[in-house]
Length: 115
Image (cartoon, rainbow, N blue to C red; front, side):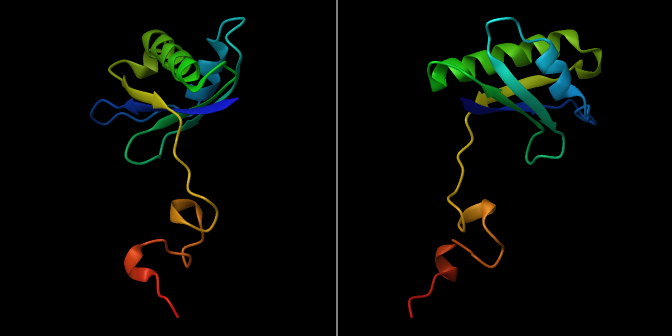
């Protein structure tokens, strides 16, 4: 199973509807093996729909997520003027480093001290 982040391009003043993930999931077709989708309207720098896909490869999962997002953008009236920037697996930092770690566990080189 792959987690794919579909980064969306909002029109000026656009806000991703909170039900976008549910609507995307409802548009999945039998055999596509879309397991879950959730909207992250406040993600930076772009709103994201996180899509869990069971696929043979990462490339296949990304293509399927992109296809699902295009289907959503073409059918949901609340997403008129929106676009898909990209659909790809997110890079995640290991625990304690980067954006997923606690604030006091900086991974910035100037914060690392050898004692």
